[in-house]
Each structure stands twice: as structure tokens, then as C-alpha cells.
Image (tube, rainbow, N blue to C red; front, side, top):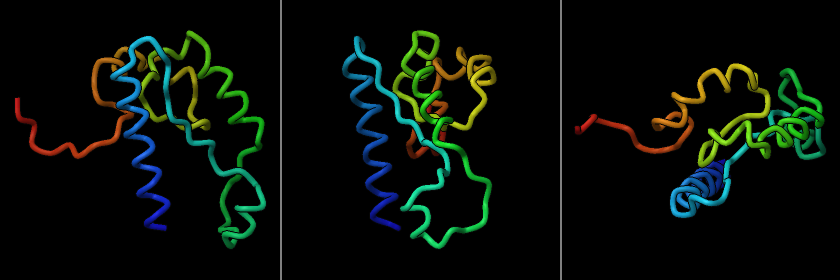
Length: 108
């Protein structure tokens, strides 16, 4: 599990840097939710609500639209409510919300 989490975090930070260094492209990381797949079956199937594969598919279509431009350089989950995300667009764009990092003492 440690190698999976470490590589996932590295990928997320890499995409944040790509977004920062390339202002003309849209880059975001999306967690698809918990989908009933063969890989999930092999994991021991911990009882939990499962999402249908259509949820991340539809979310990706929205994420690729200009309406989601505030998600650039951020990590989002496909099972989040889009209207709630849009309501926080200015807050998300203006700070470190939905980014990964070590946020300690606020040196200002």
C-alpha cells in the first residue's frame, strides 16, 4: 500500500507543477470513486457503497469543459457534487484548496 500511495501523491504533485509551469494547458487529477471492478474484487471487497462506472465518465466530461477551469492543477473526486464545487470556485482558485502539500506554520 505504501508504494501505491507514494506514487499516487507523486503523480498528483507532478500534475500540480505541470499546471503551474504551463498556464495554457488544463491539468487536473481525478479520483474515480470506488467502482466495482476485477481489481476491487481482488482487494477483499470491503463492504461499502459502490459507484457505477458512468459516474466518473460523466464527471470527466464536465471536468474537460470550460465550466471546470477552476479545477486546474487540483485533485477532485468524481463523486463530489458539481454544483457544490462550482459554488466554491473562487475559494478553490485563490488558495491551496484541493492541492497536496505539507502545510504547517503559516509563515507570512
